[in-house]
Length: 311
Image (cartoon, rainbow, N blue to C red; front, top):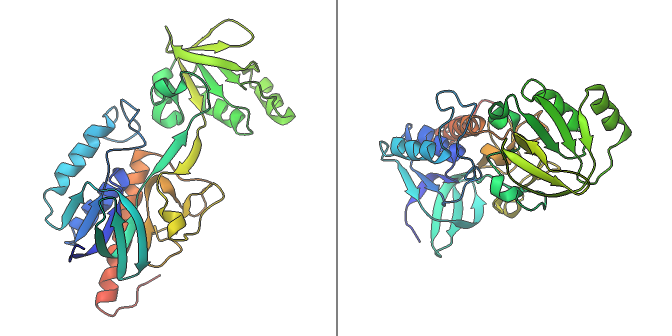
């Protein structure tokens, strides 16, 4: 076992985890950052809606962040996968894939989420490009082209309303599902085209994406928005018995604190008060990592000096 006890173990080295490490490193907190080479936004060639980094490849941002961390001797980057976490405040143990153990006084989870796309041939290959989820991250790139929305759930009309200033026209693809009356009525009032034919497959097309429907000719679109299935990318919320929302996200307070003392969460796995889901964006993830790290530092500073921590 590593004899070093870190003040904080940050699990996850995406935007949330790296920003958390930077905040802690600047306070000279001994921190271990555990990361792998897998990231949720790997399929995206560029990230958008991030001030100063609009259009930057995600890997470039991570590389720049790691370069920033090299200035801080308190930060140790570990290219190791954590398999299990146990313990209590002041005495957490992290087990890694290579069989080693690492001790930490606090744990900050920034392990991210995993997307599951509908089972449509060709969709995976275009994900993060002309197939997207977030209109704030990817919508502008489809400006002036016909845009599709794949889905039949109650949120479809709102998604269409968000895209009406971007798309030259909108088409909802229900993939064989029937729309509820209220949804169908809202889309009709908005003059949104609805196609109920099953989607046979998609591929790259002259405008961006070609969609093959079972009941008609190929539909040419500039982009297609999809609501993927959401799940945590790591099992630690369940291992640590953290409170979770109905969708499975870790419930945190405004400081990133989870229901288990000494454990914080940030980024795509963390659902803040008043939100129906985590805010999945690189900028928000980084900000939540900073907030959780600062709260963690305050807690340790208070504990080390016998002080009451203000609420």
